[in-house]
Length: 207
Image 1 (tube, one colour):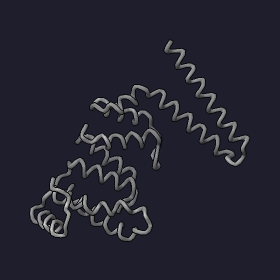
Image 2 (image 1 turned 90 degrees about the vertical axis):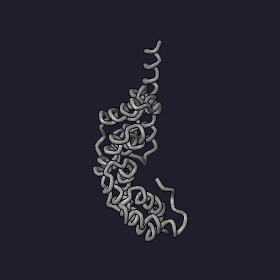
Image 3 (image 1 turned 60 degrees about the horizontal axis):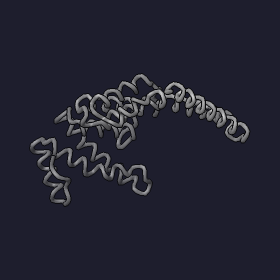
Image 4 (image 1 turned 180 degrees about the vertical axis):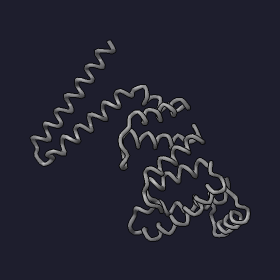
């Protein structure tokens, strides 16, 4: 992988090499350069410039994948683009597809792809239906490939699921009458009671 270009001369050299030799790494390095500005897309004061740099960055990213469809880092960033809408229309299904390809090819070299898939399905974010079985599937793969972080989460899976469901239940309760203090207090007390009962049950089972 060539170093990130630092001067205009470096950029021109990479562009010529990428075009003339159909060089994968030169195209990726150019994507990496222009993606810096692209990731500023959410900042209104740079929006026009960011959109332009997103277009350029994605050109080189797509070129990288044309040359090597199995470039796991390029697959990962393609997924991120579709998840966040960097230079493309947001499409969570395409993002999932690219994340899935990235982890299947890259394995433990790209835990971030597996982690993104886990988060999407565990929380049911961005229009995707929550699927705890899929979430657990991805976290098991990460743990099997040596991720201590995911193994620790897996070891405490039931607790994490309980906390998630308790939080979701509390959120639904609050949505009914968020402006009424007595109702809010009732929702909080119910969640606290469920948590206390769960802790007591866990402690009882461990004795």
